[in-house]
Image (cartoon, rainbow over the protein chains, first blue to last red):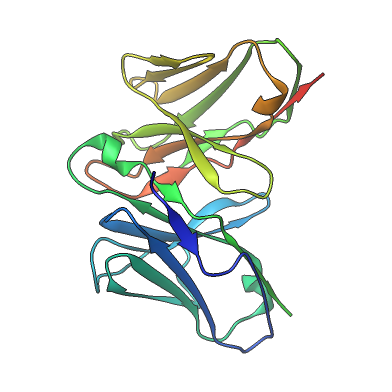
Length: 116
Length: 111
């Protein structure tokens, strides 16, 4: 089974702090993704990565950055946390490749971040 | 903007009922189609992929109509454990690894 793990289930930070959210997948997947999920807004893509050291902006990258130094690990960074970044953060991975089935994404359990 | 539209519900149905969810997508180049299930305060998990020929997995049947850009999910003999939010998901274009998620349809199965 694919396993995607996230560093914390719950996190409380103060405005202005630098926040690191880490995600690790154990199935040698090429693609990794960071989303945030808010009530009424659904899942929104923040950043994604197709390969090591490669990153692409998603729909809402402002206020975030990412790092992918190793294939299995994808980190989301909030440079200066703000209250409007309070949310559920979900990491996902997918195999990549030519088959349409390889687009299936496997999610981690999520990190519920509260910024005070 | 490429979107996936779903009725948010909630659908409140008695145990044993048959319920159908529909969704429409705007990107005609989409090639991958999925239904995900998300339980309250949990991560989304794949329920089933959706193929052009339609496919069935036990009590669940998914259909795809490419011409109308429409996807459906039918749940027969609903169980209490089917209560969840169902997300319609498509990839964001030909060859794209990105997925576009609908906002979900909430189902409550009532004893």
